[in-house]
Image (tube, rainbow, N blue to C red; front, side, top):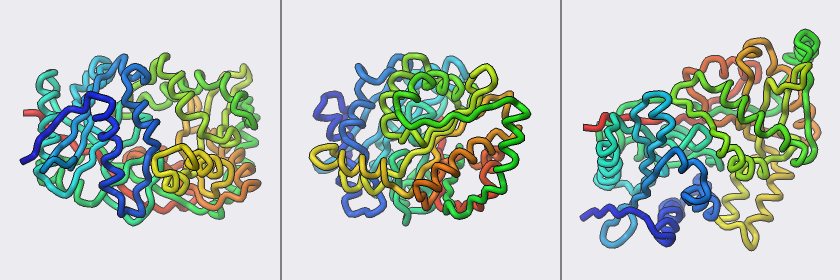
Length: 373
């Protein structure tokens, strides 16, 4: 018999966070999150997303053992501003038993129905800055800190239960040696002169902070045309600054400003923390922090996390300016591999940006959808 219980106490939420550690204990590819950070993400007093969203966290039990989990999420901003009557689900993990999956997702649908929502979509997080998608290809490759890893049977469960594909994503990578400066060196110089642009690079995190709010504003402007985009609110900016920017080498943050010092483009690259997080196994202390700090300074693999360009400057070659800045930084640091986060397969503009580097698609993922009856 399968029993679904809502995780409401601190102890229950800790069980919710720790379940995948048991599920993937024999997996070399799964990358564990930092337990403390996951718990803070779900803390309704600390995470400002709960000003505009609500979530319920469910655990599935069978024979008195935890066999699955899911977060049922309603983002009210998405519903009100986009008229998307979507019931989100995420942080989904389960043993290979489709009946457990059904029991968990029936619970999510039940909440959606009670709130007059039309359909389920997942796996997704609270917003566009969270992890997204169920993996469908590339299971042999190690995950990273900004994507979910899962076993192949997850997608099979969704199909068996009548879910259909909603959004398709691909992840690609290329060796740094594929980056040839002739593709952007002359172009970036011409573009800077034509539009009176200046590239900004940093060496200290505190020098980045005065631009951080403007960066999030530009993120909202540059991504607003994508499907299901939910803007970052003012109160969320401070939270994301604290959560993300400390993990990033300041040299890996690049800004471009116009003649009036207005921010018109940004890019964020993160060191790959996969191996460090594997060693940390969910804990910062006593040694996890040391592994993460070492990766921050010395990782030879980097992950392109975000690139944002003001709509007025899109398709004007501004990425050449950004790539030129990164080329110099990566060359000095001896970077070996460049990895891209999940990108919508129908986002042709972003794929055009990378074409000269001959990227290899090595993972695919998707979100799935089902009408609430």
